[in-house]
Amino acid sequence: MSSYQRSPADDGATSQQTGTGPGDHDTTATVTPPIRRKGSVVLRRSQAGAPQSDNILLDSDSANGFTHTDPWRVLRIQSEFVEGFGALAELGPAISVFGSARTPRQSPYYAMGEEVGRRLVGAGFAVITGGGPGTMEAANKGACEGGGISVGLGIELPFEAGMNEWVDLGVNFRYFFARKTMFVKYASGFVVLPGGFGTLDELFEAMTLVQTRKVTSFPIVLVGIDYWKPLLAWIEGTLLAEGTISATDLDLLQLVDTAEDAVRIMADSAGPPTTPDHSGR
Image (cartoon, rainbow, N blue to C red; front, side, top):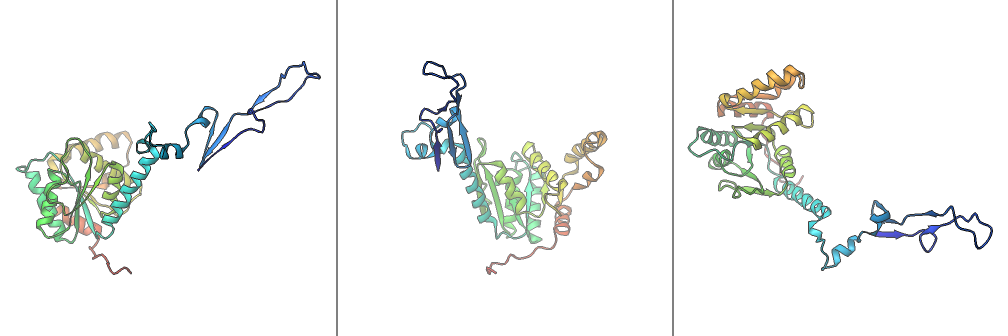
Protein backbone atom coordinates (compact mmCIF):
# COMPACT_ATOMS: atom_id res chain seq x y z
CA MET A 1 0.00 0.00 0.00
CA SER A 2 1.34 3.44 -0.93
CA SER A 3 1.02 6.81 0.78
CA TYR A 4 1.93 10.29 -0.34
CA GLN A 5 3.21 12.94 2.10
CA ARG A 6 3.20 16.65 1.37
CA SER A 7 5.13 19.29 3.22
CA PRO A 8 3.33 21.42 5.84
CA ALA A 9 2.85 24.31 3.39
CA ASP A 10 0.10 23.87 0.86
CA ASP A 11 2.47 24.55 -2.04
CA GLY A 12 5.09 22.10 -0.82
CA ALA A 13 7.54 24.75 0.41
CA THR A 14 8.45 26.27 3.77
CA SER A 15 9.80 29.80 4.07
CA GLN A 16 11.79 31.74 6.59
CA GLN A 17 11.16 35.50 6.12
CA THR A 18 14.08 37.80 6.82
CA GLY A 19 12.52 41.05 5.56
CA THR A 20 10.67 43.62 7.73
CA GLY A 21 7.92 44.68 5.42
CA PRO A 22 5.58 43.51 2.75
CA GLY A 23 7.92 44.68 0.02
CA ASP A 24 10.85 42.59 1.22
CA HIS A 25 11.77 39.45 -0.74
CA ASP A 26 12.11 35.96 0.69
CA THR A 27 15.84 35.23 0.37
CA THR A 28 16.06 32.05 2.48
CA ALA A 29 13.17 29.95 1.14
CA THR A 30 13.80 26.22 1.54
CA VAL A 31 11.92 23.80 -0.70
CA THR A 32 10.99 20.47 0.84
CA PRO A 33 10.69 17.87 -1.92
CA PRO A 34 7.58 15.73 -2.11
CA ILE A 35 7.94 12.38 -0.36
CA ARG A 36 6.02 9.25 -1.16
CA ARG A 37 6.23 5.95 0.67
CA LYS A 38 5.64 2.79 -1.32
CA GLY A 39 5.80 -0.06 1.18
CA SER A 40 9.39 -0.15 2.41
CA VAL A 41 10.55 2.10 -0.44
CA VAL A 42 10.93 5.88 -0.06
CA LEU A 43 10.49 8.02 -3.19
CA ARG A 44 11.49 11.68 -3.45
CA ARG A 45 11.46 14.42 -6.07
CA SER A 46 10.65 13.14 -9.56
CA GLN A 47 10.33 9.54 -8.35
CA ALA A 48 7.43 10.50 -6.07
CA GLY A 49 5.21 11.08 -9.08
CA ALA A 50 5.49 7.51 -10.35
CA PRO A 51 2.19 5.61 -10.73
CA GLN A 52 0.98 3.68 -7.71
CA SER A 53 1.14 -0.10 -7.78
CA ASP A 54 -2.65 -0.22 -7.50
CA ASN A 55 -2.92 1.99 -10.59
CA ILE A 56 -0.80 -0.41 -12.62
CA LEU A 57 -2.60 -3.47 -11.26
CA LEU A 58 -6.18 -2.22 -11.63
CA ASP A 59 -5.94 -0.04 -14.74
CA SER A 60 -6.55 -2.39 -17.65
CA ASP A 61 -5.44 0.31 -20.08
CA SER A 62 -2.05 0.74 -18.46
CA ALA A 63 0.86 0.48 -20.86
CA ASN A 64 3.00 -1.03 -18.12
CA GLY A 65 1.47 -4.50 -17.81
CA PHE A 66 2.15 -5.98 -14.40
CA THR A 67 3.29 -9.24 -15.94
CA HIS A 68 6.21 -7.34 -17.47
CA THR A 69 7.47 -5.90 -14.20
CA ASP A 70 10.19 -7.11 -11.85
CA PRO A 71 7.78 -7.64 -8.90
CA TRP A 72 5.77 -10.02 -11.08
CA ARG A 73 8.95 -11.85 -12.04
CA VAL A 74 9.74 -12.29 -8.35
CA LEU A 75 6.38 -14.00 -7.90
CA ARG A 76 7.01 -16.18 -10.91
CA ILE A 77 10.46 -17.11 -9.59
CA GLN A 78 8.86 -17.93 -6.24
CA SER A 79 6.35 -20.17 -7.98
CA GLU A 80 9.18 -22.10 -9.67
CA PHE A 81 10.78 -22.82 -6.32
CA VAL A 82 7.43 -23.86 -4.84
CA GLU A 83 6.71 -26.20 -7.77
CA GLY A 84 10.19 -27.70 -7.63
CA PHE A 85 10.17 -28.21 -3.87
CA GLY A 86 6.70 -29.72 -3.99
CA ALA A 87 7.52 -32.11 -6.82
CA LEU A 88 10.84 -33.35 -5.39
CA ALA A 89 10.34 -33.21 -1.62
CA GLU A 90 9.74 -36.95 -1.31
CA LEU A 91 12.15 -38.05 -4.02
CA GLY A 92 14.54 -39.81 -1.68
CA PRO A 93 18.28 -40.33 -2.34
CA ALA A 94 19.20 -39.09 -5.80
CA ILE A 95 22.21 -38.30 -7.99
CA SER A 96 22.33 -35.55 -10.61
CA VAL A 97 23.83 -36.64 -13.94
CA PHE A 98 25.14 -34.00 -16.34
CA GLY A 99 26.31 -34.23 -19.92
CA SER A 100 25.89 -32.83 -23.39
CA ALA A 101 22.50 -32.41 -25.05
CA ARG A 102 24.32 -32.94 -28.37
CA THR A 103 25.59 -36.45 -27.72
CA PRO A 104 24.28 -38.68 -30.55
CA ARG A 105 22.62 -41.96 -29.67
CA GLN A 106 25.31 -43.94 -31.44
CA SER A 107 28.06 -42.33 -29.32
CA PRO A 108 29.86 -44.40 -26.69
CA TYR A 109 29.12 -41.54 -24.29
CA TYR A 110 25.40 -42.15 -24.80
CA ALA A 111 25.88 -45.81 -23.92
CA MET A 112 27.89 -44.70 -20.89
CA GLY A 113 25.03 -42.45 -19.80
CA GLU A 114 22.56 -45.33 -20.05
CA GLU A 115 24.79 -47.53 -17.93
CA VAL A 116 25.28 -44.79 -15.34
CA GLY A 117 21.51 -44.33 -15.02
CA ARG A 118 20.87 -48.06 -14.79
CA ARG A 119 23.58 -48.63 -12.20
CA LEU A 120 22.49 -45.67 -10.07
CA VAL A 121 18.93 -46.93 -9.70
CA GLY A 122 20.34 -50.38 -9.04
CA ALA A 123 22.26 -48.83 -6.14
CA GLY A 124 19.06 -47.30 -4.77
CA PHE A 125 19.28 -43.76 -6.17
CA ALA A 126 16.88 -41.75 -8.26
CA VAL A 127 18.46 -40.13 -11.32
CA ILE A 128 18.11 -36.39 -11.98
CA THR A 129 19.06 -34.86 -15.33
CA GLY A 130 18.28 -31.71 -17.24
CA GLY A 131 15.55 -33.64 -19.04
CA GLY A 132 16.86 -32.89 -22.52
CA PRO A 133 18.30 -35.01 -25.32
CA GLY A 134 21.77 -36.51 -25.64
CA THR A 135 23.49 -37.71 -22.49
CA MET A 136 20.58 -36.53 -20.36
CA GLU A 137 18.21 -38.73 -22.32
CA ALA A 138 20.61 -41.63 -21.99
CA ALA A 139 20.77 -41.40 -18.20
CA ASN A 140 16.98 -41.04 -17.94
CA LYS A 141 16.56 -44.04 -20.23
CA GLY A 142 18.90 -46.19 -18.15
CA ALA A 143 17.09 -45.20 -14.96
CA CYS A 144 13.66 -45.83 -16.45
CA GLU A 145 14.57 -49.21 -17.93
CA GLY A 146 16.26 -50.11 -14.65
CA GLY A 147 12.97 -49.66 -12.80
CA GLY A 148 14.02 -46.56 -10.85
CA ILE A 149 12.83 -42.97 -10.64
CA SER A 150 13.80 -40.90 -13.68
CA VAL A 151 13.65 -37.14 -13.10
CA GLY A 152 14.05 -34.31 -15.59
CA LEU A 153 14.51 -30.65 -14.70
CA GLY A 154 13.87 -28.88 -17.98
CA ILE A 155 14.75 -25.32 -18.96
CA GLU A 156 13.18 -22.96 -21.46
CA LEU A 157 15.65 -22.75 -24.37
CA PRO A 158 15.20 -21.70 -28.01
CA PHE A 159 16.93 -24.79 -29.39
CA GLU A 160 15.59 -27.68 -27.31
CA ALA A 161 12.23 -29.39 -27.73
CA GLY A 162 11.31 -30.13 -24.14
CA MET A 163 11.54 -33.26 -22.01
CA ASN A 164 12.86 -36.51 -23.40
CA GLU A 165 10.49 -39.47 -23.43
CA TRP A 166 12.26 -41.28 -20.59
CA VAL A 167 11.45 -38.68 -17.93
CA ASP A 168 8.84 -39.98 -15.48
CA LEU A 169 8.85 -36.94 -13.17
CA GLY A 170 9.51 -33.67 -14.92
CA VAL A 171 9.58 -30.03 -13.85
CA ASN A 172 10.10 -27.21 -16.34
CA PHE A 173 11.85 -23.97 -15.36
CA ARG A 174 12.23 -20.52 -16.87
CA TYR A 175 15.19 -19.53 -14.71
CA PHE A 176 18.53 -21.31 -14.61
CA PHE A 177 19.23 -20.43 -10.98
CA ALA A 178 15.95 -21.95 -9.75
CA ARG A 179 16.70 -25.11 -11.73
CA LYS A 180 20.27 -25.29 -10.41
CA THR A 181 18.97 -25.12 -6.85
CA MET A 182 16.93 -28.28 -7.46
CA PHE A 183 19.94 -30.10 -8.94
CA VAL A 184 21.88 -29.49 -5.74
CA LYS A 185 19.17 -29.56 -3.06
CA TYR A 186 17.78 -32.96 -3.98
CA ALA A 187 20.98 -34.74 -5.01
CA SER A 188 23.67 -36.42 -2.96
CA GLY A 189 26.32 -36.02 -5.65
CA PHE A 190 27.10 -35.25 -9.29
CA VAL A 191 28.14 -37.59 -12.08
CA VAL A 192 29.48 -35.53 -14.98
CA LEU A 193 29.80 -37.03 -18.44
CA PRO A 194 31.40 -35.23 -21.41
CA GLY A 195 29.60 -32.02 -22.28
CA GLY A 196 29.91 -28.40 -23.36
CA PHE A 197 29.34 -24.99 -21.81
CA GLY A 198 26.19 -26.00 -19.93
CA THR A 199 27.89 -29.04 -18.43
CA LEU A 200 30.94 -26.98 -17.48
CA ASP A 201 28.69 -24.37 -15.89
CA GLU A 202 27.01 -27.01 -13.74
CA LEU A 203 30.36 -28.64 -12.93
CA PHE A 204 32.06 -25.46 -11.74
CA GLU A 205 28.96 -24.38 -9.84
CA ALA A 206 29.07 -27.65 -7.93
CA MET A 207 32.80 -27.30 -7.29
CA THR A 208 32.32 -23.76 -5.97
CA LEU A 209 29.53 -24.84 -3.62
CA VAL A 210 31.70 -27.61 -2.19
CA GLN A 211 34.82 -25.40 -2.02
CA THR A 212 32.95 -22.70 -0.10
CA ARG A 213 31.24 -25.32 2.10
CA LYS A 214 27.77 -24.35 1.01
CA VAL A 215 27.21 -28.09 0.61
CA THR A 216 29.10 -30.85 2.38
CA SER A 217 29.82 -34.51 1.61
CA PHE A 218 29.02 -33.92 -2.02
CA PRO A 219 31.07 -36.13 -4.38
CA ILE A 220 31.73 -34.92 -7.92
CA VAL A 221 32.82 -37.59 -10.40
CA LEU A 222 33.98 -36.97 -13.95
CA VAL A 223 33.45 -39.90 -16.31
CA GLY A 224 35.78 -40.13 -19.32
CA ILE A 225 39.51 -39.84 -18.66
CA ASP A 226 40.48 -38.83 -22.20
CA TYR A 227 37.82 -36.13 -22.30
CA TRP A 228 38.42 -34.53 -18.90
CA LYS A 229 42.16 -34.99 -18.41
CA PRO A 230 43.14 -31.88 -20.44
CA LEU A 231 40.84 -29.74 -18.32
CA LEU A 232 42.29 -31.12 -15.09
CA ALA A 233 45.80 -30.56 -16.45
CA TRP A 234 44.94 -26.91 -17.11
CA ILE A 235 43.42 -26.50 -13.64
CA GLU A 236 46.56 -27.90 -12.04
CA GLY A 237 49.08 -26.31 -14.40
CA THR A 238 47.51 -22.86 -14.50
CA LEU A 239 45.10 -22.22 -11.65
CA LEU A 240 47.11 -24.03 -9.00
CA ALA A 241 50.42 -22.75 -10.39
CA GLU A 242 49.14 -19.17 -10.27
CA GLY A 243 47.83 -19.63 -6.76
CA THR A 244 44.19 -18.93 -7.63
CA ILE A 245 43.13 -22.25 -6.08
CA SER A 246 44.56 -24.38 -3.29
CA ALA A 247 46.08 -27.84 -3.71
CA THR A 248 43.23 -29.29 -1.66
CA ASP A 249 40.74 -27.95 -4.23
CA LEU A 250 41.98 -30.58 -6.66
CA ASP A 251 40.50 -33.19 -4.35
CA LEU A 252 37.01 -31.93 -5.15
CA LEU A 253 37.02 -33.96 -8.36
CA GLN A 254 37.39 -37.67 -8.96
CA LEU A 255 38.17 -38.93 -12.46
CA VAL A 256 37.06 -42.38 -13.61
CA ASP A 257 36.59 -44.19 -16.90
CA THR A 258 33.66 -46.51 -16.18
CA ALA A 259 30.08 -46.25 -15.01
CA GLU A 260 30.80 -48.93 -12.43
CA ASP A 261 33.51 -46.83 -10.77
CA ALA A 262 31.37 -43.68 -10.86
CA VAL A 263 28.42 -45.34 -9.14
CA ARG A 264 30.66 -47.06 -6.61
CA ILE A 265 32.05 -43.68 -5.55
CA MET A 266 28.54 -42.25 -5.29
CA ALA A 267 27.40 -45.15 -3.13
CA ASP A 268 30.48 -44.96 -0.89
CA SER A 269 30.55 -41.16 -0.54
CA ALA A 270 26.87 -40.34 -0.41
CA GLY A 271 26.11 -42.98 2.19
CA PRO A 272 23.65 -45.84 2.03
CA PRO A 273 20.37 -44.88 0.33
CA THR A 274 17.32 -44.82 2.54
CA THR A 275 13.66 -45.12 1.66
CA PRO A 276 11.80 -41.81 2.19
CA ASP A 277 9.19 -41.83 4.96
CA HIS A 278 5.76 -41.13 3.45
CA SER A 279 3.88 -41.69 6.71
CA GLY A 280 3.74 -37.98 7.51
CA ARG A 281 5.67 -38.34 10.74
